[in-house]
Image 1 (cartoon, one colour):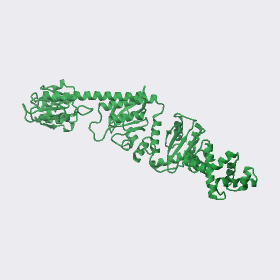
Image 2 (cartoon, one colour):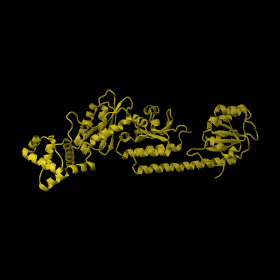
Image 3 (tube, rainbow, N blue to C red):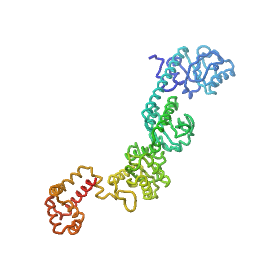
Length: 540
């Protein structure tokens, strides 16, 4: 590689500082006289001039090289010379102190300082032609690299669109390609999707709505607001659906370059297509993702979880949380149940997240005020769910004080659902199920797939069932009457339509077949558990 070519700054034009660091210029011992703070100006071309009015040949962004020979003698002429360079947008003025001057004229220094134009002196002779060749090669190389990167961006988003990628995939790709945090928000400034890059979700989303409202919406991709966000509207045929925001990375130089703009604009286009293809509203997707992270404890930290939920409009402090699961069965599908349930809670003034946790199962997270009772809210929600799907099962966990503990509430609600068979009668006083409702039968129903329960049942009752099968007897039913009567033989005989003598005879046969003592309370309990499990397994 040519020693005059340093590593080109990726994604942008070289700055004045970059050019001064090139060996071809550093050999001239450059000294920055004025404009030290402006050395991050981009250099778009190099122009050698010995004219008194070089501005007429410039278009802006040029590094102007001169030996100082054409500089006017009078201070007014020098000021005019600098004014013209400044007004046309020259990046910097480099003067060689070899031929005419051996120190920069005071008038030139004062004029450059007054107009904020970087003035650089060279103490040694430099081949200006070689400088132009090296810098122009660097600029053109960067431009070619930028074009190739832009092409790769277009190809990546085209591939995403062709395979029908959802909004999460699109925003994730944008953050990955840009190296910046990207956020998709809706029209009421709720952050629906956040892909952090170089920061945490907490850092990106804390105080989101207030910060977002401080950045006025525009009709085009632009940088604005107190934090210098790069934003782009997401819209279709004049209807605006939301806004993308790319956040600047703390501690980096120039905020955004052409590549960042390209990435954000292509992201907006891909999101528009995704919304047209996918029927699920963005808000539903956002709620679903947030709920799954909470229920499965997939968030990186409690702070991240609070920031994400708060950015969706859910209070996260000074409140209590309650998880509810709604199993819809086959009675309802699509996005209508989510919309109806969320609308019902909103009309009740209860902040909540509502989203699909798995096919046919909706998760609901309520944020309740400390003094607000949860049962009326759960009852209202349950009745709405049953109106949508009469066979729906609504299960409620327990209240928790911290958002990070909602996973426990979701686990409890899941246990209730697992222990509730289809068609299970509702309690007399409510239309939802909760943990205290789980009796022995429902516990065994939840464990019905466990081979240990099946093995236990077979070991306790198998010989009796085999006897009934071979001999056509019904001793299992007799045992059931006896156990249901808590060992009262008279009651058991009446329920079975048997005489006391026949009942005694059958019980002795059962004791012999099972090698057990039915007078023992412990043995009766063991058999009652096994018989209940058998009834559950046979019913299932």
